[in-house]
Length: 308
Ligand code: GLU
Ligand code: ZN
Image (tube, rainbow, N blue to C red):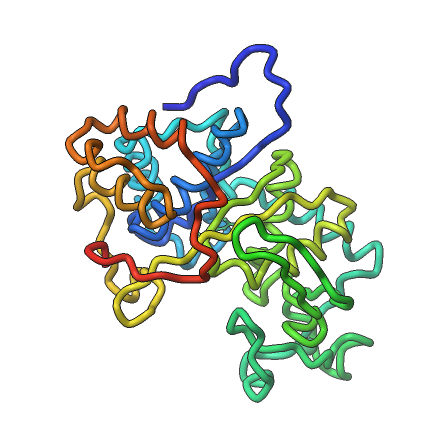
């Protein structure tokens, strides 16, 4: 159930959980929800819920409602109204106009096929060779919008340590509006976090490689950069990120107390054995009182036995 912030609270911490409604919550998404929620509450902070349905073709009808129901069943409490990215197109469009007006964004005509020979960036996308940077080739029309990306981004991740990424050498100029007209995740997440005043981003380490671009984009938009903590990613025995593709089981197939205890252990917290038979509320109480981000394993991924 949503609950209101305590009166006179002036603590600056604002955290969030931002699931993509591409399917049911699985153990990996539960870990991100638990970590971001506990870190916010340990700081007397706010914890926001945002449904990242900006990628309409990947959105599964009913998945968002299912995720919300699961979060409620687990006893999560978020602050304020849920934000839906699908309702925020005008805000993303305004950010794109700002970037265009400042000369940071340019149209790109390149197709996936034309970029197929480029080296892979750390996140698996193709590095952009800069073909349309100084203008579209004659006779071609712009399809996507990209941002000029230069410089080295450094940040201290609370779990993964110091990160340093050379934007040009990694992904190059990246897409902020896709050829299909949809706004890219990188733009939406940055605009939404900035507008909500998010101060701390706690999420899965699969997004560590996007973070440099997001910090870069925040800078171009004149926004403050939040603190980051990237939690180990839950994998199956083959080391693959749990997802619909790996047929990860919905977390709803497990009793919430069991799943919550497993998520706490996955995050390096050390719930006492006596909690194994405790009701959900008691486990939450323990977790809120004992949360330690310093105890989270400094790994990018780990297997989640029993929760594939
Ligand atoms: N929507 C993204 C996901 O579910 C998370 C985005 C974020 O936390 O920044 O993978
Ligand atoms: Zn291009």
